[in-house]
Image: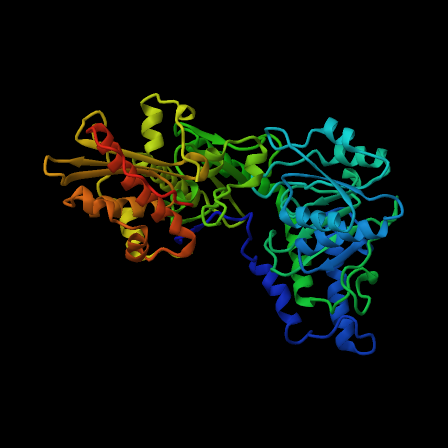
Length: 403
Length: 137
């Protein structure tokens, strides 16, 4: 077992050696520009890209013509939202999204607002899921796009995308999903789910950083987005720029492996995750954040009341995890996702996200449990809030000096 | 972000963790910060008849720098007169612990906690509280 232990697989994943192996020739021997049509170097590179396009398409039940390669999910989100807003401006100017979306979606929506668009940010229920009745009520004849993520990056909850897509379509809007955390972890099928646009990223599924894709539906309806990057007209004119051939080949390979292994991996990881979660929620005053039934198999977000997340992480220095507390920022604002669930600020400050992955072992999980338990106990001994709780003092009865 | 060795030392082996009898008139208690902000410090001093701080204890809910700032503060307080304790400046803590700019608020909180504890002690013993300038965190 190597220390520190990596349990932050929602931030990024290590690359699978099989992916690296597939990529290597495209840096040196097969280095051609996939857009060079008149010599073998170009053809070989194009072949690699074409094959990868099939591999990506297959994983999400799409056709290879519907895959646009990008630099990652942030670019895909931007291209989808800004591109749809520009392309469909004759039809309407209203976009619906949710408050728990990734910043790439939220900030692209803010940009659209600056351009005169109208955006509705749906709240979520206590379990992190979108309320379908609220979505339905928010739809207007001006609504051109509904953008709701597939699986949440902080708490792992899986949105009812099929139902959301149906509501969007009923009102004549497109449905886009940021599926960065879901693709390669759970079955995602653009046709079964009714998805018109989908953003994905390689480095969240054991592929390289700096490459991703946007799925753009071609049939029923044919969806178009206005390019946000001008240039040579690559990727059917939707995304110019010389293709990142090694990265794309790596993304393809990562998708292929995920397609073959995710079913058994999901079973293995959810068992490990549940083991970790069960062992940690034995601690007094610890709570799992978000819906536990509709959740990605490898994520558990747990709040340990009366200890602060960043301080806790310091005691867990042998574990690489994430905290919903953002004490390092000037604002001292805790996670907006956790706050959206209605968590009080102190509980949001007390949260830790455990993200398991393909290379996580049971031994590592057992070790993580021990380290975390020890850290929580140590910090509670230092915590005045814990002492007050133990004395039966209602913390809400105290007049805190806000700072 | 990397913590300084001193922060890590105070965090790993915090000095003077604990609780003094807050009902005693010889004990001053300062409770500052708010759970919503991710920082709460409770700092207590025990003062003898010569106005010397003979003991100091703390408990802190917060990040490593907040815990280290309060641990260091208790170390500095012990043996000081109340008047000298009043002079502890948050920038002394910043310097000693090599806190980065984003963690300066932790030292401010520690200074506030010291002053709040002293004022609690003063009021308990029939003295006027010292007027504090409002610090911004």
